[in-house]
Length: 467
Image 1 (cartoon, rainbow, N blue to C red):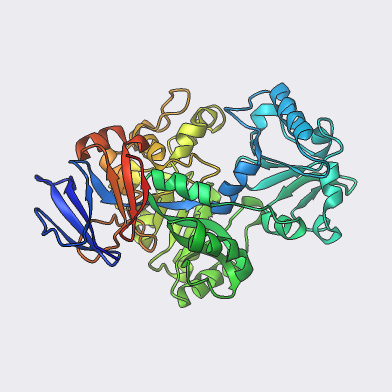
Image 2: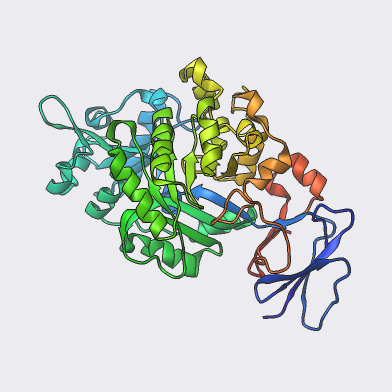
């Protein structure tokens, strides 16, 4: 493959430089690099050139499924009548027997759902509605009737006082997928959209329990999306991660009501460490964070250990995070997307602890960021802006003391997947993954806007050209 030579690039120094990519890796960075016969030249024209962005936490298959779903939450749907209208419209538009799949439901729209409330809107067609957190589905009676008997006996199926299913299913994505006909997913569109935003890598945070569950991701990584893909697995994962994927941390999902025993959690951590892998703890509450810290204190921390979300981090936990050397992978996009709701429903004493960033970095805690798409905004540049301004859709500021400068916000998406808190630099020997912008570095940092992305390069190959 001929070399790629990027000329007149602003990499943040005093003068523009050229960047040569040979065999997929950066082979030189400096002024006036030699132009060789056969070089593919890309003129940055004074625009900033960065290492390609890496989204350190998202859910690719769930994001792809959104295109085959209706949204039942703000800002599209805000009232009970809009909720009913959206469901009935979907019911009229689908062929007989097809399921309605809905996402992003928020209780502020039409209250706490169960099967009876959904039956009142759509009684005859199977309906499943995912809560905005992704942790819960609500099924109507027709949908429950379609499930295998073994599934309806699962402990994740909530039951009322008489023992009848309420329609609420918690942490049952895997079992639902096994029970229902698989949803045909196309990841090419989301890969193309992310490429246009300068994203060259993903860490998929859906923990696979079996090797076959990674098959869809492997197919996408091989033939549909240009990004490099790192995949998390669940404790006890049986099998090998396909070669086209990179094995990421072992993901531990924690829910306050169903926490494992501490000794069980410690054994998962130790097993992951023996395999040379870190552990990623899902932490959206104080309890989950305290439990994770206790497990690492007992098992010992290792490189690659992470706290996902860090939605609520009390100040007393900060020294422990620094001491353990874990990386907090934050999702400040939620401050924009849900900040108004947080200020209304989160207790005042907790609001300053939401999605900490500035105070963690000041304390020496390693940090990175992810979009958590489709549950959060999928544009990493929007997430960066939220990290700086901490401003909600309604213009309110959430935790103003936790904001960071634009360069720091950008750096949260520049770390490699194996060490997300250490931003990459364009140096000889690094991967030839580049984000070339229309705007010089100063303006890029001032605006933090995906519209500034001109060209995206993965391994020396142009995968998106917005010029």
